[in-house]
Image (cartoon, rainbow over all chains, first blue to last red; front, side):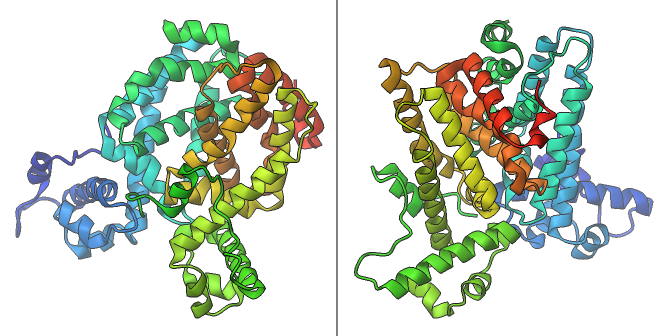
Length: 223
Length: 236
C-alpha cells in the first residue's frame, strides 16, 4: 500500500542511485528522488511529529540533496501535502474496489470499512501521517481536510447503488465518514493502529445504525 | 507537538475537578483577572483565525493589548495559555448545557435542548468550536477524554433519573469523536457560523447512546424542525 517506494531500509538502498554519472535519463532520476522524498516525509513526520521535522531530516532519510528537494517542492509543507494526496488517492482506490458493485449495500459497506481498517493498520507510519499529523500543519490543514472529507462522502454516495437505503438524516453519509475517521484517529493516537481490523464488527454496527436501524445493523455486523 | 507527558489540563480533568478555571487565585487583584481573561480571549480568537500551530505569543499580546511581561506573569508559555483557554471553553459550554433544559423534561428532550444550546453557543463564537474540535485535538488528542468526562456522566445521569437505569445502545464514548469530526468539517469548509445546520445529526449522536436509534431519529427530526429553513431541504 501507500507510497510507490516503501520506507524499508532495503528499498531505500535499492533506490539510492550511485553517485556521479549513472547514465540514467534525468527524468527518471527526478522521479525516483521525488518518490524517495515522499516516502521519507511520511516516515520522519510519523516519527518526530510535523512541527519538529526539518527539511534536513527528510533529505537525510531520503538520501537526496537539498537542491534537488527545492527543485521538486516549495517547502516542507508542499512535500507533506503531496505525500498526503498520494495516500488519500490510494485509500480511495481501495474503498472503490470493495464498495462499488452489485452485492447488497450493507455487505459492500462492511467490506469497504474492512478495507479501510486494513489500510490504516498495515502501515502505522502512513496512518499517523495521514490522519494525525495533518491536523498540526497550521491553516493549510482546513482545505486539505475538507477536500478529503468531501471526497469520501461523494464516494459513498456515488457508489451507493440501487439498494442503498434512503437515510432519514440529511447528512447521514457525513455521519458515516465521521464515525470511521473518529474511531480510527483515536486508535492511532493510542498506538493501536495495528489492531484496527478487530474493530470491524463494532464499527460496522456503528456505521450502519443511522441508515438501517439497530436490528439490521446488528445482523450485518455479525455476518 | 507535545504528545508525551501529562498536561496540566489532563491532570486537572482526571481529578474530581471538571473544568480548568480561567480565574486566578483570589489573592490576585481584579486587574490581573481582567488581563488573564483578555489573554485567554486573544488565544481563542487567534486560534480561530490561524490555528494554534500558527499562533505566536506576539499575536496574543497584540490582540490582548498587554505586554509580553504581563503575559508571562499569567502563563508559563503558549501551551499553558492554550490549556486555560480550553478549560474556559469547556466550563462555559457546561453552563450553557446545564441551563438549557428543565427538570421535568424527558431525557431525550433534555439532551436535544442541551445539544441545541451548545451548538448555538458555538455558532455565535466559532472560535470556541475551532479551538475545541480542531486545535485542542491537534495539541493533545487526549483532550477528548476531558470532553467525555465533562458530559457522559451527565448524560447517563439524565437517563438514570427517569427509570433508574441507563442502558447503553451504543458506546457513548464514540459519539464524541463523531460529533467532533462533523463539527471540525463544518469549520474546515468555512461554515462555522452555520453549525446549527448539523443539529439533527448532532442531536442524533447525543441521544442515541442511551436513547437508542428510534428515539434519536425522533429527536433529530424535532431539532430539524426547530432550526432555520436551510435545514428544511434535508428533511423528509
